[in-house]
Image (tube, rainbow, N blue to C red; front, top):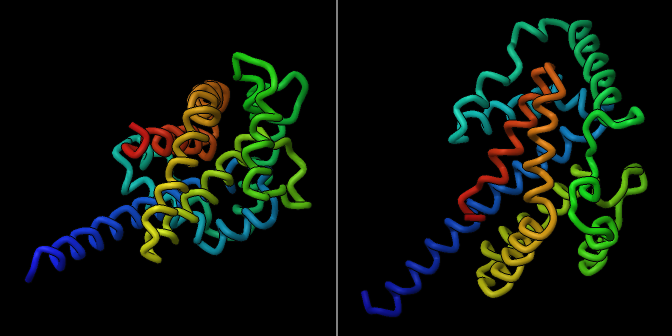
Length: 223
């Protein structure tokens, strides 16, 4: 094997590693974006059918935060559909109490954690620079924590695709956008939000979300 072949293999293996890392981050971001909106019937079906539950278990198993596993839902809590209905009714009540009442028990908006004015507009500009607009069924502000995690999902997913297609330059551009958005907007906001959420709730679902946020923003990629 000549030097060029060896270099190509190393480059390919490194690209595969970075792609896998981006896929894992994208999965965590997407999971959080779904868990931080109102627990509607779409989320309920996702949990009943097992996909959301499986994501929670997988994330807990892969995370270095050992406490995550203790907050994953117990199988005995969902023995039948009626118990699942009760659970999601409780989640809706808790979501409303935490994030919808005035004054807010826990603010899900980045602007409320920023040290300067204009955070919401700054986040909107990040979305618009990439031609992104909010879905018609998402009626929250641009700086809602679910929206910001959804944006990171978009960036990480695009990075993973670029690595997979062998476009390393484009992949690094997506990676830099992700890193910049995390450091400029979501990072400190998410840390403060997760602390406030854990202090304000005793519902396992949202305690798990608080721990999952910490695990996501502590990714070695950002260190």
